[in-house]
Length: 175
Image (cartoon, rainbow, N blue to C red; front, side, top):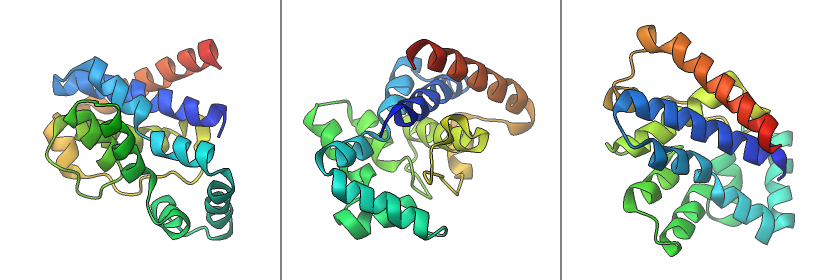
């Protein structure tokens, strides 16, 4: 875990902020959710580096293996659940906890902050910002897009351009 983790987190935070504008949601909370969505992975890497390396190795060996499944095989729990526990211990608002917990969910709960974080993760991975290896969300929940009010035909070019530009700008500043 190095700069790629933080580059990805910043990109998801930026994407969440941009999506929050569309969904008329707090941009500050959305940024926080994006920055912290993978905090469980950081905990795994820092507190259990050998086991975390096993997760990474199994992902390299099995192209079809999902990161959530790989983590559960090694740790018995995934980074979303660990992130939820950390966020609860830090007494973050329930909506932030939910966004961290459900950002990989195929059918995320009907909560705008969860939806923004879920869609932000998918968009960042689709744009391949930070080339965050094997952390692809393969399914974009249509319900999340609807909840935000995202209109792909109207918002797509503008949204992608702003996310890319802001992510690259912040990456140059911090990394």
